Length: 334
Image 1 (cartoon, helix red, strand yellow):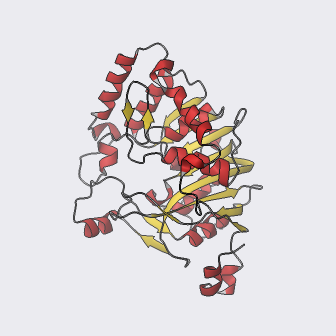
Image 2: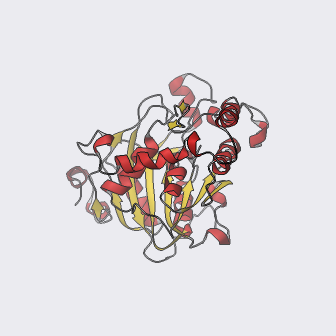
């Protein structure tokens, strides 16, 4: 099924490259608590409450979490100074809402980790409730909301985040709740090219990241290479709200002009593809059976100060195929 508006505006050669399926994500379903897996996912998060702490007590745990929340440190991230760096990397900001039982933390992206997992469980139906025996790469894990959920579902989770202070926090959560199947890693997704990452994962969760990177084609190819044959990339991203095959530039200089604030705001984007462009990009790096969800309005804070358009997508690595080599920024990418 292809969206009618694409038929109206796109030339035939573009329509021929359309994804095989366009899934109507979210549609009229606006109450996440009415979705089939809502209670299941909430129960998973309850595993991470202070009643379940291991080798520490609630008071000590709360004190350490407060220390993370007070972090303001650019040197630990390897920056020479504050200038030109985003606030989310310098100042610690909790990512996802978390009820620890004795206390609650409000995250920058609220319940998005709950909604994200439910979307791939209930709507795309690509995630099973039991992930026992499966291996998942969670790229851009922040403070670990999705990583904790996937680990509670039984997956072996490798959680990658380029900001050290967030990985330090997730490492602390791992040990506090004795999560043996979670491996936090302080590294860039662009470094996920070593042998240990190749052909290794059943799923790659690539949520809220694509529009923050400078080379989205290379980033998508890296996720493709990390998957096993038959594996799936679970995508969620901000997009430019248009049906045309375009990419909008939202670099930091654009953000300054739009917001009249300095560069060290939270967020900051580079490139926002339209949903249709995203589907083409995923196919061009090798994914097949690309399924794209319905564009919806997201949270504020993605660069321009307004609520962004967002979309979910799923791509399958059927079998490993080569990528067009002309113009690649990393010529030896697998």
